[in-house]
Length: 444
Image (cartoon, rainbow, N blue to C red):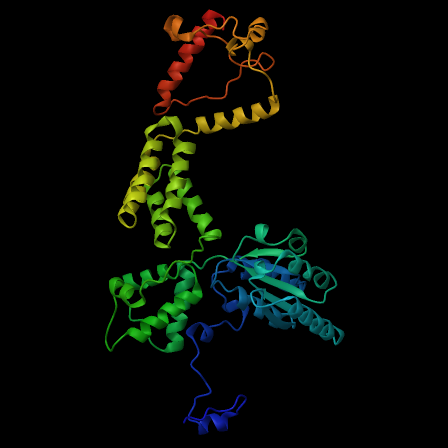
């Protein structure tokens, strides 16, 4: 039977048991910056004119919220800020912290303050706290018990309450660009004292796989070093097989989801099928529900193409039905075809704007009755009141157009739909102009 060393055993006992008390450290931990100047990719905050640099120069560090994607240095910067300003660093996670834990942390910070020691409280995933828990920070922020630094991957405007936001400055951390990721990889090669066994294309591919996440880049580098055999150099294809392509950072219920569908929609609206296909591929590759995408593409056909190409809606609906029938991956091609169709179709939001304007007017007008001549008169009383009197049946009129006014008398004639000279709406515009001419001639 193997005897395990007791908890708290010292080096001698570990050595006697044949265990290494110095467990291997992950590469990301080895490369963790020890001073703010070593943080990469956040020059807008830490450069010569950066927001944090200016704060530190004035020695007036207030409460902050760090907003940005994973692996961009939020935790590291918070720790180094405490070190630079001689504050005690305390770290908690909103996922594992309850009300009792917060009270204990605040109590310890108050005791520390009485001895002249300030506290920088770093709260990871601060958006996970509910409104009441967020409110509990307000007093200790106001009286100086703590300097709060919260970190979140979610939009603070939606996830944090207004009183907390009013007491903290939001600083945005950016995804690391290719140059910043390359700096990290170069540092890793120095620390490990060996080059990454990748050709140029594979190295570029690894940077892209990291998706702006420095921690992910270093994890991928570790996987490469673990997999390599003597004298090997991996190309891009071999790299993908080795690391099994890290899944993109994408939460279907959070910002990544809305950012990519917004990018897809705007690429379609901007008539760029290549960009639209790229964002479609990003979403599908990340595991987005294809039917969700198909529904949004139907919306694009309605909002941004409209009657400039009436076929767009039919094509997008057909793509949705095709995916429903075929499933993945075959049905995804139908969605891709629909995306190409709407991206290359003539654009018009005239119908979208016309409906919005009509809705606004309808709400303002309230319950105005239509003119009596276009109402049915099923009873004698209604006939005696003039319902249906004077109605001209359009099919009996010349050109099947009577030119009557159909708006409520108190409202007067309105114009909502103004089709552009594009696509099929060019023909619709000609019809409207022709009818306007007839209406004027016939006094309608």
